[in-house]
Length: 78
Image 1 (cartoon, rainbow, N blue to C red):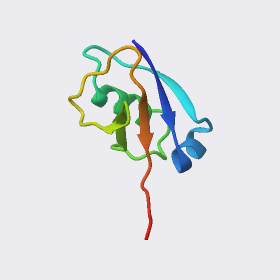
Image 2: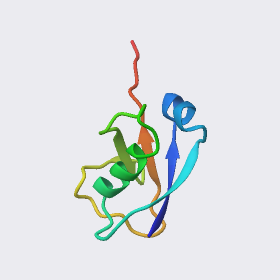
Image 3: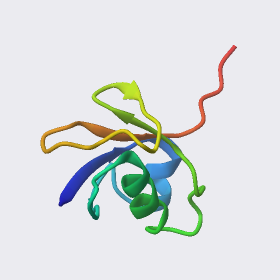
């Protein structure tokens, strides 16, 4: 299944886009999305944070058609 993934900040700069479409093998999980996104550029970390429908998700969370998936870069603040 193809999944559209939103990408933010430095990760979007690295990839050159704020959205990418990746192919995720069965079973469709956050881990599959994470691996597909990490493969887009060696400059990306191998384990970026992933959110599904605005909630942080672990690798075993399933991805369904229509889910909003986002890759979240590190955030600094004070």
